Length: 353
Image (cartoon, rainbow, N blue to C red; front, side, top):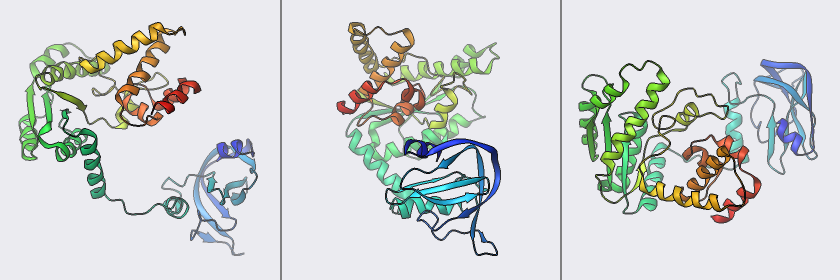
């Protein structure tokens, strides 16, 4: 809300009193956002919402075109709206459990304001994803790293529905699974109709982890071990064009940080070695390095590493590139790409797609 006010001509100032916790917000006229929402009315018939606040600064002057939507005694502008342009802002948190009608408020925004249809279902997601995979992959071959967990298993099943026999899964036993889990999970995968190669590499992992006690170091060793084994097995398969894995965004968040603090490295993100033995990526890196060396702009080591990463992603990510995709597929967080990519580079990427 404060950002919207500041950018559109309003004013934001530090509040004399912070608001944190439960609050009763008075409604001022009904907008589409607050349609059919009221937690209680006072003796004068004024309508109120029970919400959760957490702020120190506050909007003291609304931008032109906005009208007051709600307020509290200590925050006279707790909500504002410009319905002609479809701009709505609240100073409280509708997304949290403590805001009693927060879910309805979000629904009003998505359905009433944005006009979204409520026809999504898990089944439609499967159908859409399989169709997209078929279109993107065609007759290409894909190799997928299976961990035995939910994420990679879901990725495998979706890919199997899309491309069938052109998918090969590699399931590595690092020796730290439960008793008989490797055998049982391998059987389950085969029952799902997946083409799976099971590799017992437990002896390799035990030898490399012997005497290591520091958890983060263990994760790095496991990450490298996975790639070593996976790389050997993957190169036995002919004409593979795609690598698939079950990485989800929380894995990236925990493994990498724009502040330099790592929560814990996941072997499929922060635990991976910087260089993997994938020929296509190596060729791209050689090409990019030669371009950077010929550039008139002198880059420091970190900036050079950053530009290598961005240009490589530009080559391998299909379709239109945005910061969300860079954060998802790259080794840095989304915010770091936003911070360190100059406007000129952004414009170049926009015109390249």
